[in-house]
Length: 283
Image (cartoon, rainbow, N blue to C red):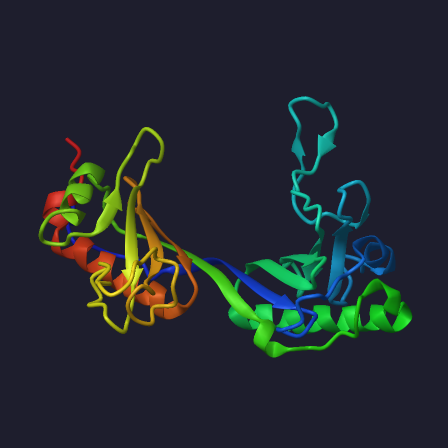
C-alpha cells in the first residue's frame, strides 16, 4: 500500500456575486416588487433562449415557470413542495445562462441583485448585465415600478464569496491535526468540536500587506475581526478551511482566488510535511 501523499487541485463549488440596477451611490432607490413580479416573463427551460425560467413573488405565494431543482416531500404534507427560501424584500428567480446551468438570482427592493450558484466570475458579470437589460425593458414598459431611471454601473458588481473543495489521499486524525495547528509551531486560530461539527476548522487570516502567509493575524495597530480587505492593520480577511476525517477539505468565505490559493498552499504543505503524524492508519 502506497504512503505517498496525493492532493487534488481545488475545485470551485460555488460563487456568490452581487450587483445592482442602480448607481452605486443612489441609496434612496426603490423597486415595487409586486409590480415587478407582474411584469416579469419566463422562458421555457429547454428552449434555446437565455433568461428567467422561474420567478417567485416576495410573499412566496405566486410563481411563474418551472422550478429547476428536484422537489422534496414535506414531512407534514403529503404533496411535494419546494424548499426554496423566500425573502420578503426580494423576488427570487432562477436564470438560465445555458443548458443545465441555472444560477439563483434575487432582486431586492433597493435594486440589489444577488447571484448564487455561479461557477465562474465571468458568468456573474454576464448575468448582472443581462438582468439589468431585462429590467431596463420592464422600466420602458412601466416606469412606475422603479423610483428613478435605471443606470448600469459595473462598479456595483463584486464577489461576495467563493467556496471550493479538494481532497488528500489519506484519512486524517483530526484531533492530532488540531493540536498541530494550535501548537507553538503554527499558532493558528483553529477549533475542533466533533460533537457539533465533524471537521477541524482553521481560521486563515489573509493579509498580504503585513501577513507572512501563515494564516496568523499580525495586526497590532488596530483591532481585527477578520472582515477586512487584507490591506494592513485591522484589515485581515478571514477564510475558513474545514478538514474532515475522510480527507475532504473545504475552503469557504474567500472573496478572491488569491485568498484561496494562499490558504490551499498553506494547508497542503502541512498535510504533506506532517502526514506521518496526522495520517489515520487502519489495522
